[in-house]
Image (cartoon, rainbow, N blue to C red):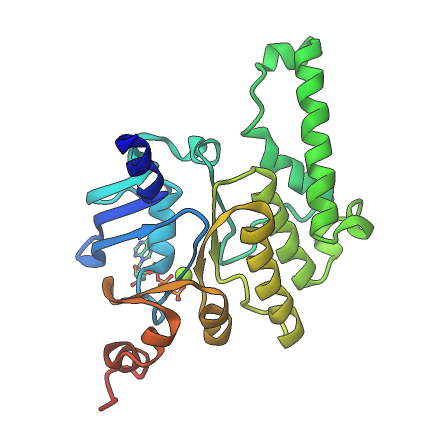
Length: 264
Ligand SMILES: Nc1ncnc2c1ncn2[C@@H]1O[C@H](COP(=O)(O)OP(=O)(O)OP(=O)(O)O)[C@@H](O)[C@H]1O
Ligand SMILES: [Mg+2]
């Protein structure tokens, strides 16, 4: 019973003393924080603070020089980047990474392939188990399409869609992987005011209706402060603050970092 309690209170994701260097540049220095199940955690900081670098460590595109990253206690750094989606981490990119000449539905389907269990041989032979799995994935994709209001665009090429819709397609693809955690890298960039309001709603519903834990990198302060339960602040590769949004907004060091050191 004691151990069950411990598992429940242990973080979903734990980042501990992570350091990343590019040549002589320390992009991340001893970064530690926990992400708890069901939380929306904002990750902010001025340009070049190390936010995307941290995301790239979590999705194993970069390997930290030192430090630990654990998902439910399991060492995430032991996995390859192509195994990360299967471990339950989905992401969107700072620059949209959709396939423009494919349809919306095809793009979302690419998110599912890493999840398919049946072997390629079973799929090629169209064995009942493989067919059942494919049917299940197709149902899931339709559900995500519906949930993200992409039904009328499902057969259109991504290149032909407005920017805001393309961002939703990328979101849909990450959701189709049924992640435990979704990493969103500046989802509000380039969106208009109304789209940002809708995005805030979508992020909350992702947590509330789909039970997905969210790590959100954003420069749009009112969005981060309104949706996040907690906020972690990076500056020049170091963590300078962590706390509730109201606390972060009045933190003198955070204010100084954003004003480029000319405050106070
Ligand atoms: N592959 C790389 N090679 C060399 N330097 C890099 C690389 N990736 C990032 N950097 C550097 O590491 C630092 C952190 O960059 P990063 O992209 O993580 O910042 P960020 O917080 O995401 O900034 P932004 O808000 O502008 O997206 C920057 O100084 C950047 O130039
Ligand atoms: Mg970035």
